[in-house]
Image 1 (cartoon, rainbow, N blue to C red):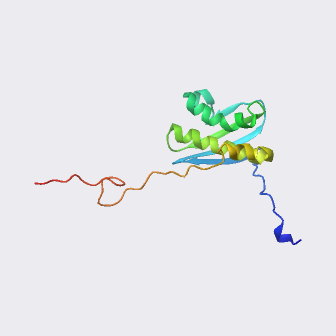
Image 2 (tube, rainbow, N blue to C red; image 1 turned 180 degrees about the horizontal axis):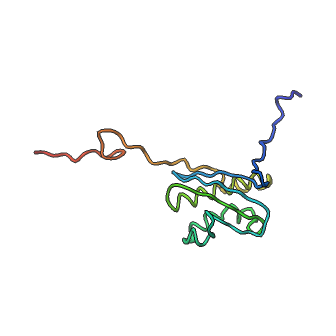
Image 3 (tube, helix red, strand yellow; image 1 turned 90 degrees about the vertical axis):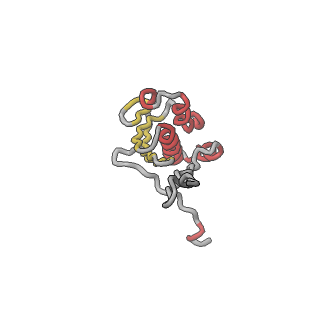
Length: 144
C-alpha cells in the first residue's frame, strides 16, 4: 500500500492557551469561536448569551450544535462576532461552534452533519448593477 493513499486527518486548530478554534460565517457576519472544557458557560462579545441574543429563536439556533451532541454542560464557549445583523450573527456562531465541536470530538461529526449544522449557508446579498436602482430594479418608466 502506498503512502499517498493514507488519509491524514486535518490538524486541530488551537490557540496559545489550548482552546479549540472554529470560524463561522453567514451573510456578512463572521464569528470566531473558542471552546474549552468547562461547565457550559457561553460568552458572546464579553456578554452572556441571554444578554447578547434576547430572542429565543437566536438562542436556540446558537445552542443547536451543543444540544444535538449532548455537550451543553461540558464545554465553555467564547465567541467574537462582527458584522451583519442579529440573525446572521447567530447563524455564524452556530456554524463556528459546530466546526469547533467537530475538532474537539471527532465522534460527533456524523450527528452534526446529519442535522446540517456543518453546512455553510452561501446566500449573500446580490450586488447592485450600474444603470439600475438596486440589484435588479430598474428606474421608473416615464411616458412624458
